Image (spheres, rainbow, N blue to C red):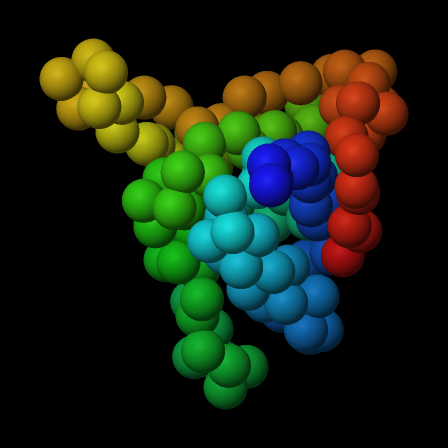
Length: 136
């Protein structure tokens, strides 16, 4: 019996703290990847804040889970899409975000970038191409 591979897109719209959405998204992504599905993450609107560098949560009394994003490549999650307009609207650039990579075993374990900057139009196309879209 052959296994059906589906394209899952996890759409992150919320800031990393103040709600459970960002943490739940990350957990579900790791579960999907563990079951060898085609997993992509997308960050739009305030979701782009989830990937910002040097997050400090001591003032809000919550655990900082942002370092977990660095492990995504180890789970073969290597398609991470950031909407350019969302970054621009928040005064952010790619330099403000964590550098996420994966190791390509076919290229002598070379580290390759996981993050791809896309336009709003390209993001729409990614959503339309996915078999399943989870919005957080």
